[in-house]
Length: 276
Image 1 (cartoon, rainbow, N blue to C red):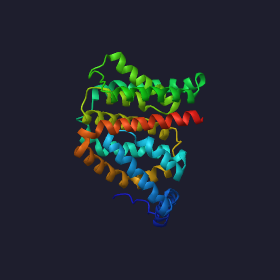
Image 2 (cartoon, helix red, strand yellow):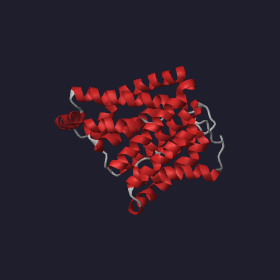
Image 3 (spheres, rainbow, N blue to C red):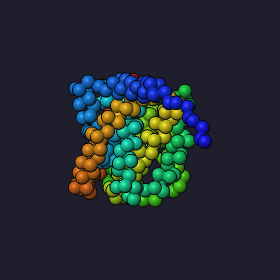
Image 4 (cartoon, rainbow, N blue to C red):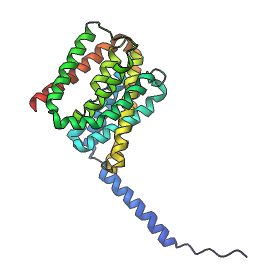
């Protein structure tokens, strides 16, 4: 004869489920913005996603300042990282075969290893001085690329590794990891599809790394992540439309648009650094 199991306390189980539901509803309520703010945040995500889906970069640089006006900078940064990661997952089947994975596998580990040393640079150099140097160098690189100068399709291994190291140093010291990588992928003799796909995947992977650190150290609240998920439909739509625009006119207009965006990034960085 089988032993009888203990009777289930139905009221206790229902109470536990009710408590979980209450916690979720409370979390959802904390994450939800007012209707006007939600509409503005969705518009910011859509615009930034459209930009990135076309050129392959610029998502966080466009989204963080816009979202910061609505949710504050502390929440805007992890939201941008999560959305950038989700964007990479959506676009992965379309861009993974076009990306320069050889370069990414060399650059990304070096950037991750060098990032902590970038924090040390802040004790030695002034962050605004670094931003001025970066913006001036970026403007010079844009001028070279606009003049028709093209980097070799294959660069020596030490040069490629130094690109990753410089990106990591800048990430740790100024939170601006992009410029060296952008010049590397845009300035070489590669197709627009390859440059776009490579930058798309590189920044998606860096966002995964950075967000993981934030989650492990428990500095990213769940309400912030839930709000980012709530805004993801605007992101997914922008990826579809931005990809369509790239394939419709990317071959002819990609580089001028990308160089214009790089110029704007450099000028904004320069103004912010000078303003202190």
